[in-house]
Image (cartoon, rainbow, N blue to C red; front, side, top):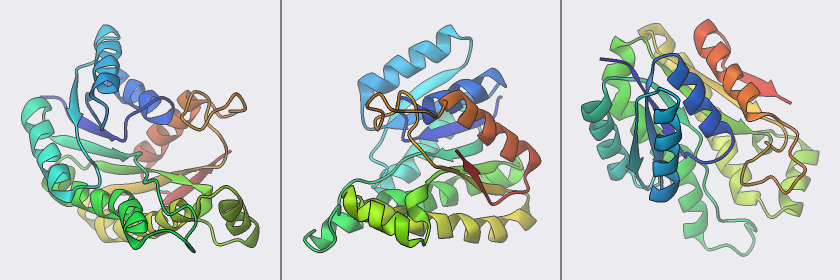
Length: 228
C-alpha cells in the first residue's frame, strides 16, 4: 500500500501544487479542508492526472476532528508518510479590539491542530521515516518592519499564530529527528500566484514552492528555509 500525504488546508496555490508533486511520486493524497466542493474538484483533477486521492472534509481547528481525520485517511489510503500543514487561522486582526476567542481560534489552527495531527500520525511517521512539512509566513519573524506591516494589514492574529507555529516546527524538528521523522518549514515571503491572497500581484510560483518542499524532505537537513 502506498504512503499517504495529508494535505491539510487544501486550496488553490501551494497546497494544490504540493498535492500534485507528491502524487506524481506515487503518494496517495488525502485532501483536507472545510469546503467539500473544492476538495472534490481537487480529487477529480488528481485522479485524472493518475494519482490516488480522496477528500476528507475537516475543521482543522478541532483537535478531535483532526485525530479522526488521520485515522480515516490511514484506513482509506494507507500509512501516513507526510503531513503537510498549509492551514492558517483568521481572526484577531487588531489585537487591541479582538475578542480573546478570535486569537484562540487562530492558535487552534496554527498550533493545536498541527500538534494533534502529528501526535495521531506519529506511529506511521516513525515506521515510514516520514516528514512533517509546514507552510510558514514572513509575519512570524521578529523584526520591527514586519510587525508594522502586520499591524497595517490587520494581520496581528495571523502574525502571532505564524510565530508560534515557527517555534513549534523547531521544537518538533529537534524532538523527532532522532526517531527518524523529519520536520521542516518553507517560509513563503511574498504572494503566491493563484492563492487566496493573489489580487493580480502574485509573483511566486506554487509549483516552485512545492518543489522546495519536495527538496527539503528528501535532504532532511534544514529546519527552516525561505522562499522568495
